[in-house]
Image 1: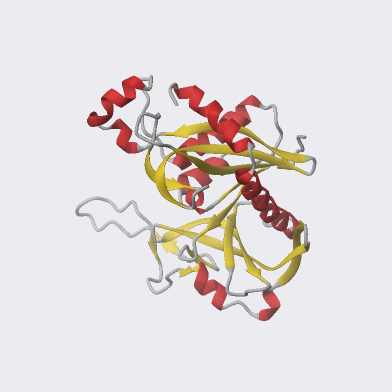
Image 2: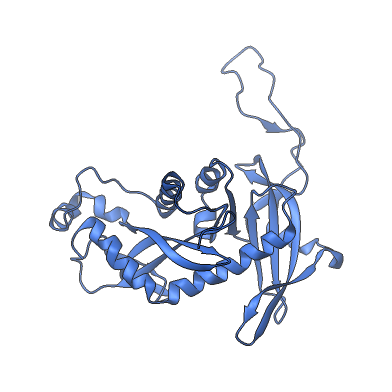
Length: 288
């Protein structure tokens, strides 16, 4: 099933639980329920290529509240290791991706994830730091960027106080815009129509726009990225945005292919395999 340009799909899912005896259980968003519920959550890695798709690894997400002193008895009853510390879902996901690289048993080039993971620059930077790996992650419409890289400078030290170490924008009015604002500025010629995948009722077709942009990081220019915008044909108000660190020379058809794989991730979440994988990850930590 492995291919050199295979895709690792990062996502999370939950399982509703009764009571508070299950390891890591608590009030949190539960994907299958579509709302906050008393549940266990896990972070999952899927894999997809032209040959098929499957779940490949997972790790239980233990709520931060479980590491408080008032949960000590529950931690002990569930067999949690004393040296286990709290990790966010993006931290867990990056560790799973790094482990997949270290195993070197499943070739892949891409890592795809939703906005929960993309909101963490550390997650995206961690993927980008892996040799030959590119991310394709959904982002929120409020994400800030520049369409051209702004000029920055290091202020001159005036001989008093601490020497400046933080860059500043050369022109303070050169502020970034949101991806939603960038969308509003697009001319009609910027859109390309493409087929995402063949569906049961015919091909799924959307409009795409592809821009090279500079991500804004704490008010300063960050990495050069692809901004991919996908617009629904049936309802043009339905728009999704994505960042990718793929090089500027990547074929745009590859970026469309990555969007189709996110649909497969959603399908994998709905299939029974997620329950089997959930049972396996609970076994990593002990009591259900």
